[in-house]
Image (cartoon, rainbow, N blue to C red; front, side):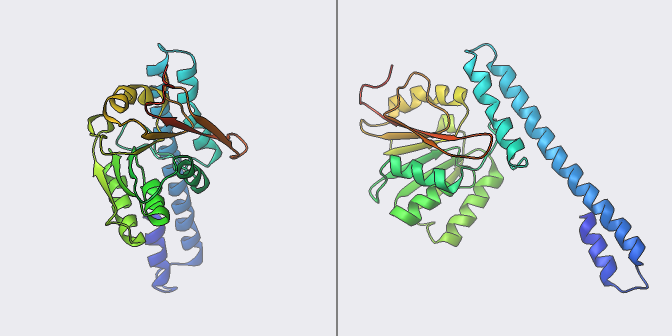
Length: 243
């Protein structure tokens, strides 16, 4: 906003704002933008700290995996967003989205449930590329609205829907594919729900974090940035690979 006001003042003419004053105001606008970015990153890091602290009582791997989101945020210039939910929204790269859908062997006959759907990119890609139907479940209302808007722009709103809902309260029984990008403790809590409601042969695909107690049918590594490589896990319900 400070930047916008400065722009309007300069646009009124030389009488209303000298070049020196314009530079000064623009400088304050830049400082405000930096402060805003730091504030968003601080909120994100604070949320990560809470997540890590809540995991200390579990196995050592849990807090370490939870804090991985911090590495992603810092490596990408803090593009992660701490939403109204308990899991930070870190967008899945397009190439990882493609691999997730390929591993699940998605077709137009599938119904995909994306738990923690963020900006909706997984379902939108699946609908555009394969004609698959789907339901996105996201607790943050802003992300839900963004997803719905993008689905309309992409011409696939007739195939997919986005619900503002807690992932732990959703009925996933219609799903043939479930996609996840959640912290390990959330995957562990979701496991009983998935085991109870999903039909044999249903596929669960998770980005970066496994489901505790399940042995993946596949675990594909993908190159990422300097700090982090991606892993895509495929689980198939009823294959006897749960431990």
